[in-house]
Amino acid sequence: MRIVSLCPSNTEVCQYLGLEDQIVGVDDFSDLERTRLGPDLSIDMDKLSALQPDIVLASLSVPGMEKNVAALEQRDIPHIITNPHSLDDIGHSIGQIADVCGIDGKEAQKRWINALEPYRSRVWTTHTRLYWEWWPKPLFTPGGANWLTEISALCGGTNIFSDRPEPSVQTTWEAVIEKQPDVILLAWVGVMTDKVNIDVVKKRPGYETTPIFVLEEKNFCRPSPNLLKGLRKLDFLLHDKKRP
Image (cartoon, rainbow, N blue to C red):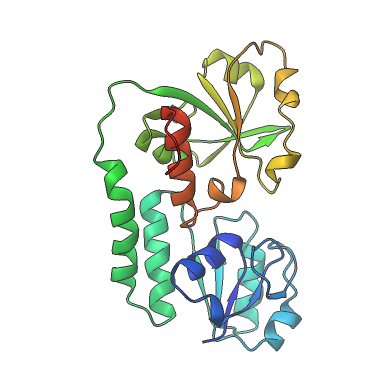
Protein backbone atom coordinates (compact mmCIF):
# COMPACT_ATOMS: atom_id res chain seq x y z
CA MET A 1 0.00 0.00 0.00
CA ARG A 2 0.91 3.65 -0.35
CA ILE A 3 0.31 5.25 3.05
CA VAL A 4 0.36 8.93 4.00
CA SER A 5 0.38 9.94 7.67
CA LEU A 6 -0.63 13.45 8.71
CA CYS A 7 0.63 13.37 12.31
CA PRO A 8 3.53 11.84 14.29
CA SER A 9 1.35 9.53 16.38
CA ASN A 10 -0.10 7.72 13.36
CA THR A 11 3.35 7.51 11.78
CA GLU A 12 4.56 5.81 14.95
CA VAL A 13 1.62 3.40 14.89
CA CYS A 14 2.65 2.40 11.35
CA GLN A 15 6.22 1.81 12.53
CA TYR A 16 4.90 -0.29 15.44
CA LEU A 17 2.92 -2.38 12.93
CA GLY A 18 5.89 -2.87 10.59
CA LEU A 19 4.39 -0.68 7.87
CA GLU A 20 7.23 1.84 7.71
CA ASP A 21 8.30 0.83 4.18
CA GLN A 22 4.80 1.50 2.86
CA ILE A 23 4.71 5.13 4.04
CA VAL A 24 5.25 7.52 1.12
CA GLY A 25 4.49 10.86 2.79
CA VAL A 26 4.35 12.41 6.26
CA ASP A 27 3.76 15.71 8.02
CA ASP A 28 6.78 17.84 8.91
CA PHE A 29 6.83 16.74 12.57
CA SER A 30 6.95 12.96 12.05
CA ASP A 31 10.32 11.40 12.87
CA LEU A 32 10.62 9.60 9.56
CA GLU A 33 12.46 10.59 6.39
CA ARG A 34 9.79 10.59 3.73
CA THR A 35 8.25 13.18 1.41
CA ARG A 36 7.35 16.11 3.67
CA LEU A 37 3.89 17.53 3.18
CA GLY A 38 4.01 20.50 5.54
CA PRO A 39 3.09 21.03 9.19
CA ASP A 40 0.23 18.88 10.43
CA LEU A 41 -2.20 21.81 10.46
CA SER A 42 -1.26 23.06 7.00
CA ILE A 43 -0.78 20.04 4.76
CA ASP A 44 0.02 20.67 1.07
CA MET A 45 -2.91 18.83 -0.48
CA ASP A 46 -1.62 19.14 -4.06
CA LYS A 47 1.64 17.49 -3.02
CA LEU A 48 -0.29 14.84 -1.10
CA SER A 49 -2.53 14.06 -4.09
CA ALA A 50 0.53 13.67 -6.33
CA LEU A 51 1.71 10.80 -4.09
CA GLN A 52 -1.44 8.84 -5.09
CA PRO A 53 -1.98 7.34 -1.63
CA ASP A 54 -4.13 4.28 -1.08
CA ILE A 55 -4.93 5.56 2.40
CA VAL A 56 -4.31 8.75 4.40
CA LEU A 57 -4.15 8.58 8.20
CA ALA A 58 -5.51 11.65 9.99
CA SER A 59 -6.12 12.19 13.71
CA LEU A 60 -8.40 14.51 15.63
CA SER A 61 -6.01 14.24 18.59
CA VAL A 62 -4.25 17.09 16.75
CA PRO A 63 -6.33 20.27 17.26
CA GLY A 64 -7.25 21.77 13.90
CA MET A 65 -6.92 18.51 11.91
CA GLU A 66 -10.53 19.03 10.81
CA LYS A 67 -9.22 21.37 8.11
CA ASN A 68 -7.19 18.58 6.53
CA VAL A 69 -10.05 16.11 6.83
CA ALA A 70 -12.37 18.50 5.00
CA ALA A 71 -9.82 18.87 2.19
CA LEU A 72 -9.43 15.08 1.92
CA GLU A 73 -13.19 14.69 1.68
CA GLN A 74 -13.44 17.43 -0.93
CA ARG A 75 -10.82 15.70 -3.09
CA ASP A 76 -12.32 12.25 -2.45
CA ILE A 77 -9.00 10.90 -1.15
CA PRO A 78 -9.35 7.65 0.86
CA HIS A 79 -8.68 8.30 4.54
CA ILE A 80 -9.44 7.28 8.08
CA ILE A 81 -9.61 9.42 11.21
CA THR A 82 -8.34 8.35 14.62
CA ASN A 83 -9.16 10.22 17.82
CA PRO A 84 -7.36 8.68 20.81
CA HIS A 85 -7.27 10.16 24.31
CA SER A 86 -6.98 7.13 26.60
CA LEU A 87 -4.70 4.08 26.48
CA ASP A 88 -7.66 1.97 25.34
CA ASP A 89 -8.38 4.55 22.63
CA ILE A 90 -4.79 4.18 21.42
CA GLY A 91 -5.26 0.41 21.25
CA HIS A 92 -8.40 0.99 19.18
CA SER A 93 -6.47 3.31 16.83
CA ILE A 94 -3.74 0.70 16.41
CA GLY A 95 -6.39 -1.85 15.44
CA GLN A 96 -8.13 0.64 13.17
CA ILE A 97 -4.93 1.45 11.26
CA ALA A 98 -3.91 -2.21 11.11
CA ASP A 99 -7.25 -3.25 9.60
CA VAL A 100 -7.23 -0.60 6.89
CA CYS A 101 -3.65 -1.51 5.99
CA GLY A 102 -4.32 -5.23 5.65
CA ILE A 103 -3.14 -6.43 9.07
CA ASP A 104 -5.22 -8.26 11.69
CA GLY A 105 -6.45 -5.37 13.83
CA LYS A 106 -7.57 -7.55 16.74
CA GLU A 107 -4.13 -9.15 17.02
CA ALA A 108 -2.44 -5.74 16.81
CA GLN A 109 -4.69 -4.38 19.54
CA LYS A 110 -4.04 -7.47 21.67
CA ARG A 111 -0.30 -6.87 21.39
CA TRP A 112 -0.81 -3.37 22.82
CA ILE A 113 -3.02 -4.64 25.66
CA ASN A 114 -0.49 -7.34 26.54
CA ALA A 115 2.31 -4.77 26.74
CA LEU A 116 0.32 -2.78 29.32
CA GLU A 117 -0.84 -5.74 31.40
CA PRO A 118 2.26 -6.07 33.65
CA TYR A 119 1.75 -2.45 34.73
CA ARG A 120 -2.02 -2.69 35.11
CA SER A 121 -1.73 -5.71 37.39
CA ARG A 122 0.28 -3.83 40.03
CA VAL A 123 -1.27 -2.38 43.18
CA TRP A 124 0.10 0.77 44.81
CA THR A 125 -0.41 1.74 48.45
CA THR A 126 1.11 5.21 48.09
CA HIS A 127 0.96 7.65 45.20
CA THR A 128 3.37 10.36 44.07
CA ARG A 129 1.65 13.62 43.13
CA LEU A 130 2.73 14.59 39.61
CA TYR A 131 2.45 17.88 37.76
CA TRP A 132 2.84 17.40 34.00
CA GLU A 133 3.62 20.54 32.01
CA TRP A 134 2.89 20.49 28.29
CA TRP A 135 3.51 24.19 27.67
CA PRO A 136 5.01 26.91 29.88
CA LYS A 137 3.19 30.09 28.82
CA PRO A 138 0.27 29.88 29.10
CA LEU A 139 0.43 26.75 31.22
CA PHE A 140 -1.10 23.63 29.69
CA THR A 141 -1.30 20.28 31.42
CA PRO A 142 -3.13 16.99 30.76
CA GLY A 143 -6.49 16.52 32.45
CA GLY A 144 -8.32 13.40 33.57
CA ALA A 145 -9.32 12.20 30.09
CA ASN A 146 -5.73 11.79 28.94
CA TRP A 147 -3.27 8.93 28.57
CA LEU A 148 -0.78 10.62 30.93
CA THR A 149 -3.25 10.40 33.80
CA GLU A 150 -3.43 6.65 33.19
CA ILE A 151 0.33 6.27 32.77
CA SER A 152 0.83 8.17 36.03
CA ALA A 153 -1.45 5.72 37.83
CA LEU A 154 0.27 2.68 36.30
CA CYS A 155 3.53 3.90 37.84
CA GLY A 156 2.09 4.67 41.26
CA GLY A 157 1.56 8.36 40.56
CA THR A 158 -1.39 10.73 40.53
CA ASN A 159 -1.82 13.49 37.97
CA ILE A 160 -2.71 16.49 40.15
CA PHE A 161 -5.14 17.69 37.45
CA SER A 162 -6.89 14.33 37.05
CA ASP A 163 -9.97 15.92 38.65
CA ARG A 164 -10.47 17.98 35.50
CA PRO A 165 -12.47 15.92 32.96
CA GLU A 166 -11.02 17.38 29.77
CA PRO A 167 -7.96 15.88 27.97
CA SER A 168 -5.98 19.14 28.11
CA VAL A 169 -6.25 21.91 30.71
CA GLN A 170 -5.11 25.52 30.62
CA THR A 171 -4.19 26.45 34.17
CA THR A 172 -2.13 28.85 36.30
CA TRP A 173 1.02 28.44 38.34
CA GLU A 174 -0.95 29.42 41.44
CA ALA A 175 -3.28 26.47 40.85
CA VAL A 176 -0.29 24.15 40.45
CA ILE A 177 1.28 25.30 43.73
CA GLU A 178 -2.04 24.93 45.53
CA LYS A 179 -2.19 21.25 44.50
CA GLN A 180 1.25 20.61 46.05
CA PRO A 181 2.95 18.30 43.55
CA ASP A 182 5.76 16.02 44.71
CA VAL A 183 7.39 16.02 41.27
CA ILE A 184 7.32 18.37 38.26
CA LEU A 185 7.57 16.72 34.83
CA LEU A 186 8.32 18.93 31.82
CA ALA A 187 7.36 17.52 28.43
CA TRP A 188 6.88 20.63 26.32
CA VAL A 189 5.11 19.78 23.08
CA GLY A 190 7.37 20.08 20.05
CA VAL A 191 10.44 21.08 22.11
CA MET A 192 13.56 18.91 22.25
CA THR A 193 14.78 18.08 25.74
CA ASP A 194 17.98 20.10 25.35
CA LYS A 195 15.89 23.19 24.62
CA VAL A 196 13.74 22.91 27.77
CA ASN A 197 14.92 25.43 30.36
CA ILE A 198 14.01 24.36 33.91
CA ASP A 199 15.00 27.81 35.18
CA VAL A 200 11.71 29.03 33.67
CA VAL A 201 9.96 27.01 36.37
CA LYS A 202 12.39 27.80 39.18
CA LYS A 203 11.84 31.54 38.69
CA ARG A 204 8.08 31.29 39.18
CA PRO A 205 6.68 32.77 42.42
CA GLY A 206 6.31 30.17 45.15
CA TYR A 207 8.63 27.58 43.65
CA GLU A 208 10.88 26.06 46.27
CA THR A 209 12.64 22.73 45.88
CA THR A 210 10.19 20.40 44.12
CA PRO A 211 12.21 18.01 41.91
CA ILE A 212 11.99 18.83 38.20
CA PHE A 213 12.57 16.31 35.41
CA VAL A 214 12.70 16.99 31.67
CA LEU A 215 11.19 14.20 29.58
CA GLU A 216 11.18 13.48 25.85
CA GLU A 217 7.90 14.81 24.55
CA LYS A 218 7.71 12.23 21.75
CA ASN A 219 7.46 9.49 24.41
CA PHE A 220 4.80 11.24 26.48
CA CYS A 221 2.84 13.78 24.42
CA ARG A 222 1.82 11.68 21.43
CA PRO A 223 -0.97 9.07 21.58
CA SER A 224 1.15 6.32 20.04
CA PRO A 225 3.05 3.13 20.97
CA ASN A 226 5.99 5.37 21.92
CA LEU A 227 4.13 5.80 25.21
CA LEU A 228 5.45 2.36 26.17
CA LYS A 229 8.94 3.91 26.25
CA GLY A 230 7.59 6.77 28.33
CA LEU A 231 5.89 4.34 30.70
CA ARG A 232 9.15 2.50 31.34
CA LYS A 233 11.01 5.78 31.79
CA LEU A 234 8.50 7.12 34.32
CA ASP A 235 8.54 3.83 36.22
CA PHE A 236 12.34 4.02 36.56
CA LEU A 237 12.19 7.68 37.52
CA LEU A 238 9.60 7.32 40.28
CA HIS A 239 11.05 4.16 41.77
CA ASP A 240 14.76 4.81 41.38
CA LYS A 241 15.34 1.68 39.37
CA LYS A 242 18.40 1.14 37.24
CA ARG A 243 18.01 0.60 33.56
CA PRO A 244 18.57 -3.01 32.43
